[in-house]
Length: 491
Image 1 (cartoon, rainbow, N blue to C red):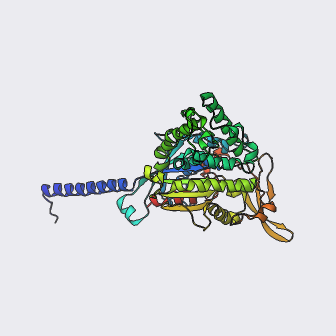
Image 2: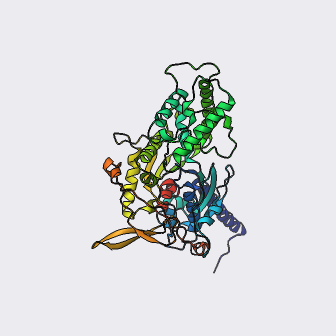
Image 3: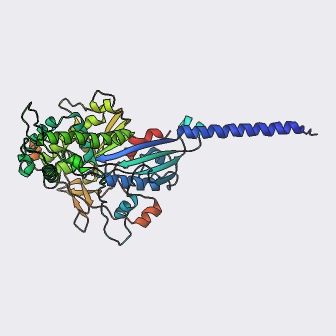
């Protein structure tokens, strides 16, 4: 015999169950808000390091990552949410506060319809641009699973010109100190042959706007010649002279160049020296300081790309000049020290990854040496790294893998070679690219002319099938870089 509960008891049971469900839903909602993260990541680097290619390949591979089935890691196997099949959805969208990164246009240059024009690398961007990726995932850690069934991490990717990095050290220099250093460089090596009329200017000349503008143009031409072939020099400072940005900068603040100044002398009233010293200070106040305060210091993580292979190809002067440029900008990433930058502004950058690009231009057994060589370029004479970021690391990567490793017989032995299409040619070729030293090259290394690396075009990738299969753009260690920069957010 059954006994029916009183109506009041049923109401109490229903109310209790509703309260439990409501509390559970509230807890889950709170857990999702706790787990939800937003991270701003910068991709930068010196000229021709591949910032635009990196951003495009990363966003494309992320867009496809959520389409993979259980147990499939596609082209991001070392990115933990993909490796654990915990990624449910990826949504790409522009950022509200920055010009849009031209992702779609860049992607369509790399991944083209079958039978279409040959793939090519996208053009470099000239200003600050951004794009966001919202990753919906299921937490895998114990506490994450207790707090929420799913949540979202938003990665805001920002691309800014690496040349702008070279301006940050100016904040700690006087005009006289900068002039002396710039002239020492201009009087050495290949720079001495390409320096223009600006080098003969008399500091005591009467300053006029026409003369200041002429000096700016002459000095900018010199910097452009330094960066271009065949010199491929990296220490082109001020970097904003070559890449002013979106066209809003007042170029009258750029009207200065190095001058030969007598030690301890006071600039005469109305002289070129006085006018250029004033413009130098104005450039720091109007151009460099806002970049550090409003852009550079607001990144949570930064990726700095370096074309080490290109510097090796260009020769010892280019290589050592790149090393000089890198070592000059390293202190800008420091946090909590007593530098002027640290005193003026508080940077929130927690992690910095320095990556040697174009790793696909050497065989896989050279990746480790490429990483070690990049680190050696940045250390001081004691082997110490002059950076105090919370976490810094080095990597070798390629955002687009243009070659394949093959094992072939050579003089009775098996060796590893590269197979790919060299830029400007039509058919795939096999070649032995040589070896990367794990230390700074010696004089003997340079004399032997051992560094002859070829440049390859992107592989043929059919846009339709790439999207349908979710295979993405092949790469080298793109996923490892993503894991280092963002992996701690997925728990």
